[in-house]
Length: 249
Image (cartoon, rainbow, N blue to C red):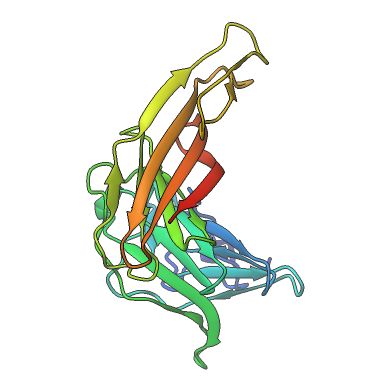
């Protein structure tokens, strides 16, 4: 690290959200991080311009290349507010990092970032259009994951114990909501399981003693004429893993 103490201390402001040595100010990442295996980049969707009691987030992405062990950063988006509670997924087919803000601090964005652009001004990557918050009032600390086969982003909304779907081919389209059939299942001992019906998961009590959920939902994507059935196992409200996905023509 190089630079004077006052260049790094409390109250210092960094308009490009980087220290004098080029590394980003350390933010609370929430779920604004993804890995690009092709570029071998660890990508952070937002930055900070100030730390301490007056912490300020800014829509400036940062990329750490694991081959060269160097940082680079993207341009600031002029209107996106990416504050606490956000969530994201990596779309490998489009090479787009999709991110959704939380509600806190005026979070207002569903947005994408493509890392594949040298802007010739010291910044890298380009933003998609910004789309408004798709889940106002319930956007904090959710999780989303793209299904690359069906080309559908599935969102687990913990405040509703429900699944939603976003169409990455039409990101401005209204989010689709399905009232999930959720069965909360807890066991009396660690390792015990509870059988479920077809297309549902077999869940166990987690080591952290949180309740596990089995969720079964169906989404339809009219443009492709298929019905998608998902079984999801949720170990905590903000994490989920798709266990099965079936396409019904």
